[in-house]
Length: 553
Image (tube, rainbow, N blue to C red; front, side, top):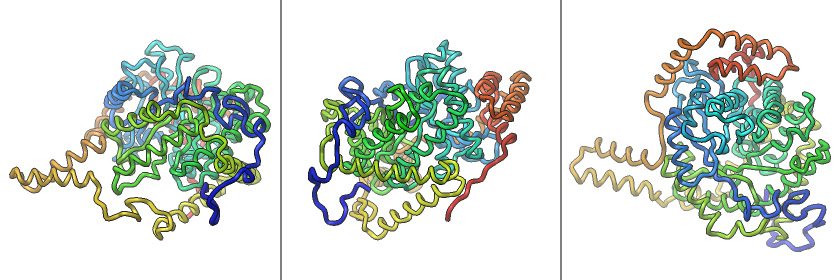
């Protein structure tokens, strides 16, 4: 999608069916195609928010402080896979995963340690978590209270879009889609009245695209998922304008410059129409599509990783031209490892170069009016609406997930893409094009090894030095004792907490059986009494059962 069809080489005004007031409007005006603020980045630069976290709470805290020193303007917490799936360190599926893909969090005290010395009332924080989003939100609230920060001061986002986990990532925490929507919508409803600056959900097109979808699928399926959450929240008795202004998005930015800019512009227009016309939202804030973007990790390559710097710089420029509200980048080695402090520094520096040295912030929608861009914006919108309505005809997002439809169509698209790469039809530098050139990092690290051998080191010692050099540049690994220390921490918590935790967990189970009850008060009470992530999510697994999604082969 986004490629010029056939042998066409250019666009003309005849290719654009456009009414300026109806389809574009000025920046900051309905339907917000050209941007959600009149002056865009001239008065409000995008937030630099690198995704970070690994190992222990203390290590993650140190990295966050360093990122803020480097000029990052928001935080985004990466949680390890056990935490993402609602499992404690002593669960068999946690073995070998503690602290590997993010920080391990057991109780609110861990959250407190993650943010020690960081004023939670002054920094915007994204909790990149889905199935246990309500639990981690509760821990953030309680940790904030311990810092003396009231709920109405807390600013940030819980990702909380569990529906995409069923077909794009798999970290659905064993919940079934319908129960997952209940839990997510309970958080949306609760946060709207108790933490007014908090985005209770970040609707995730990002992971849909990473799974292998087209840009149109990313748009349509994200909108269908959003519709399911809105419907569930409205059914709780919430007026749409009470919570819709705090709905946010995370979208994927790929490599097609004009196509990706068109995608964002089309989605802004779709969201404005969707909220005003389909849901009857009256508040202008409910019509505004506010999005974070992570540059597409699936567009990075393990071969010749230095070329990923160029890819990500292009993706950041695309996102800036498209008018997103915050950005994070995947850089260098992130095709196969967690970034090191040095790589994070490069990531922030690239965003700062684009913001300060390119002039991209001087005007809103700088590419607006280009015939190809406007034509593609219209095309993306038409196709995404058609696919969205197809999902609605199936019964909506939950039905599409349960039938395996999402997984089938995205897997088919990913397969066709891989065939195109392997045949050479789609060229990727370093993979199927210019493959014979050595990576500059391989050259440097091999020179380190050779110099060690010249200095008389044994081959195995020289290889150890080479490996240490690679590790220091590439990534931060969780310490070898991360799993053992997490288990010790868990045992200590269980040995020293009050019996009131059992009362709180029993009350949570009672609430889980009553569909009309919002679960957040019971979750927060359990969190205050030192219930762990695994214990709270375990209540839901026990009460609702475990779900195993359909997978297409």
